[in-house]
Length: 275
Picture 1 (cartoon, rainbow, N blue to C red):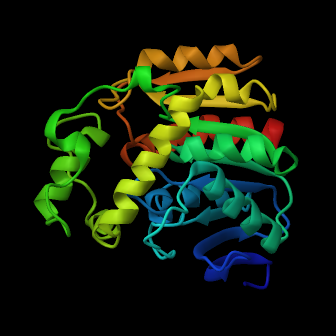
Picture 2: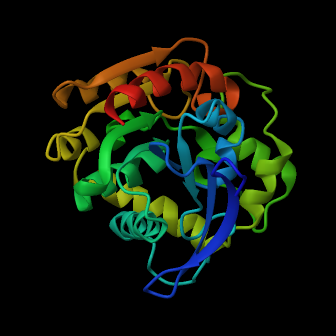
């Protein structure tokens, strides 16, 4: 921690169930909290380019968690990857950090965990931000051979790039090298089990229906050129009273990587009002 009270820390937290999660913190401890939850086959590092925009000039305390099965967190070969369990762990992280209420931001399937956190621990969530999170399975766009993931494990760089290519707005976008290692660091079981857990949660009930119950303020940002989820499906979130939905022209499934400032602007405005 710096003399100003700013945290720039990476740590491992062992939770009550024995699982260990990797947690990153940036920004002043006394500032309003933004909790950032990454998507499938990714990690807290997917937010690296966005974090400086959210913490300067000391505007927020940003907490990032590698969900179980990802990044520097444990990757058990068992069935502990259900979305409500992931949300419970994230809630325990906030408790252990003494972070209090947070604006919870999820990218892609990270928005599914964010939704579950609002359901399971509404007292911890002041507002929800979803970035390119499909509202239901009906919004999914079949993407051919890359949709099921790499054909072998561990995958090579080009296999990962092929799998990840639909995560961006334009063919030929080069996936950052730092994120290739995040996929290779997963086990085949954690890769498939976390994907299946997201699908099971969406099959049970669509996200707008879920989010309408806790009634938290909701901002939905959606890259208009998403090649994994129909961007028109973002309108489904208007079923949540007061939801604000913004399409981002020229961006695809991963605006947090493609154009961080275009995500930071509306996110910061929303968080300033609801944080």
